[in-house]
Length: 363
Image (cartoon, rainbow, N blue to C red; front, side, top):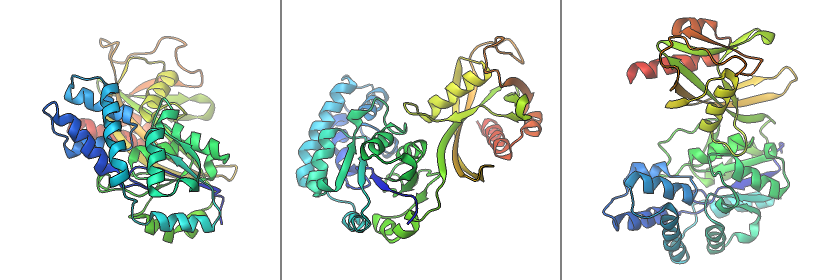
């Protein structure tokens, strides 16, 4: 067996077939105000805390109630329905039995409330199997921030790199990667068409169980999520010269606890370049880069980049940040697209610039 010492599960959509209940509840609420919940909108809230879903739906449909009221009503409807309607996802009990034979402690990292989690585990008959539970009530930043998975690992007493994380949604997988865990995705009918990067993907929990020996013997690796920004203006691209290392690179940094990837991209770009007032123009997606560090560690880095634009200094063709505003190790440079591609040290970052250029050309 490899370095995995614990397994942390998501709940809704992964263990419990609860999306139909959530969809039904939100449809009931929206129908009262003359709206219909379309598939795309429901897909966009998969993996989010109920509070975050409520805020999104209230804003999107301009509901005459507060997000807190919408959240409370959705919670009431679902809690009333769970005892009679909640079903386990196929393969759940088989997977739990396989994990039990391997004596691996189990944790739960769910965006749902504590009341929802406890009732669901009780109805499914698996409450006693989980040593630690982290719910949306425990954090201020839900998935895709890493907080839920980190909290579950802390309560298990297991370092995040030694945890296998199972989730069904891209925000959940992103959260697990940002937490430094080994991520495994089991998409649902609502998330199967979405992009899953930096993880193993299985069609069912039965398939996960059949692959357990392989998963648990995976060679140890350092996994993390990095987010960065490609800032453009008037045909120029912002790059950073790092004289002490002889590098020219893009702004990028680790996604930390309490942050989402887009928040990290904005923060790192501002801190490293000195430019504030950045606006997100597009999400360029995610890619995974694997390499061996000089000290021998195997690194699996999932990168997520955003196309950014400046909202200040609009009259300057090649604006410069205020003196001393950026990190001392970096010198910001504005280069035309072709020069930026030629100057960048790393091929992976060149690919991000090519993608950004193509995306801008098609918009």
